[in-house]
Amino acid sequence: MSALPQERRLITAIPGPKSQELQARRSAAVAAGVGSVLPVFAARADGGIIEDVDGNRLIDFGSGIAVTGVGASAEAVVRRASAQLADFTHTCFMVTPYEGYVAVAEALAELTPGDHAKKSALFNSGAEAVENAVKIARIHTKRQAVVVFDHGYHGRTNLTMALTSKNMPYKQGFGPFAPEVYRMPMAYGYRWPTGPENCGPEAAAQAIDQISKQVGADNVAAIVIEPLLGEGGFIEPAKGFLPALSEFARDNGIVFVADEIQSGFCRTGQWFACEDEGIVPDLITTAKGIAGGLPLAAVTGRAEIMDAAHAGGLGGTYGGNPVACAGALGSIETMKELDLAARARHIETVMKARLGAMQEKYEIIGDVRGRGAMMAIELVKDPTTKEPNPEATAALAKACHQEGLLVLTCGTYGNVLRFLPPMVIGEELLNEGLDILEQAFTRI
Ligand SMILES: *Cc1c(COP(=O)(O)O)cnc(C)c1O
Image (cartoon, rainbow, N blue to C red; front, top):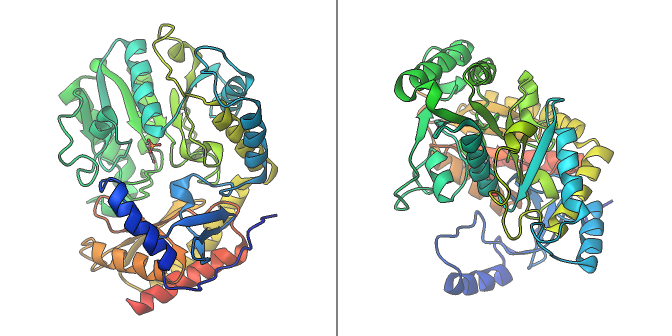
């Protein structure tokens, strides 16, 4: 199915000479604040493989941060986006509309949880979607406060920096931040003082008490939460936490916003991660996996909330660009045709078994968690103290990179290795990637 051979191949050191040349040009021309996980320059990518400019082929356990779940050059995405490019690149939906935008909004209404009437607005990036969800929640409720959670990540714009929990590297030196943002405890089972079994209800009770006492439920426009945390360390909010918060929101006229920018679009084995506990969010933000790599984001939700903003209050020059919309329709078509949600569940089965076996052998693996093709291991210095081990995490990532396996780290303490393979990755590459990871443990 893939034009690019689905085989790992190392013909130079990583990074190779051509990548190093480009890295020198990059250092001179690109702002230092824009980092890269691995200074290997891409030439082609598809399926589970990224081919670099030196001809090395790396196994991709990153999907460009959970974006290319359908592969980085999926046939239907390329076909539809190319056809749209030839027809027209842009008119601006706010000037002269086009069908692709409407078709994406229709698809989002069909795919997102709940059978109520839904509407969408399209944007360019995840951060922009989150900002707009807050705008919509504020104008709908006529309230200002926004509640977010420890370890949450929502983007790099001014408002979304304020919503994001982690200071370094996202916020350090970039303040002042937007006001009326309140952060509550997260139901982080692995690190909850009274244990994971009690975590969901206890954390929910704490959060609800703090919201009521410190902010006042009547002042809260929105509760914004990732149903499965991304950058914060692939934390699965302990069972019961999300339902309790969603119920609290409903009882108090608060807009419940699920930020599914990383967890959405089949990644966790369902179309959206919040389906796992039967949550029906009022608004849902999507981006990353939506369009097979083209820049697109959306806010989707209850029609009466989405319609609260006056005409001209929402939008943007490029929001819902026609080529990106065509890409999204191709990506959604691929997810349905190949049943990538089922594929993600299969990846979970394979990974959980292998990572679980590694945990038995290597006691620095404190926790194995995640769902679908969104799995992670949390590394600690000692399984009883659970002291975070960012050094081992960085060393493991580096060892994997040198062997041609692209893995990413994350977590508030920088001690989580996360695995986000494209859902279309072949069985052999998936296992080979896990072999490389296992060898990396023996090497560090
Ligand atoms: C990546 C991400 C964002 C920000 O998306 P951008 O497209 O990078 O602006 C917001 N929320 C979550 C959960 C994310 O993973």
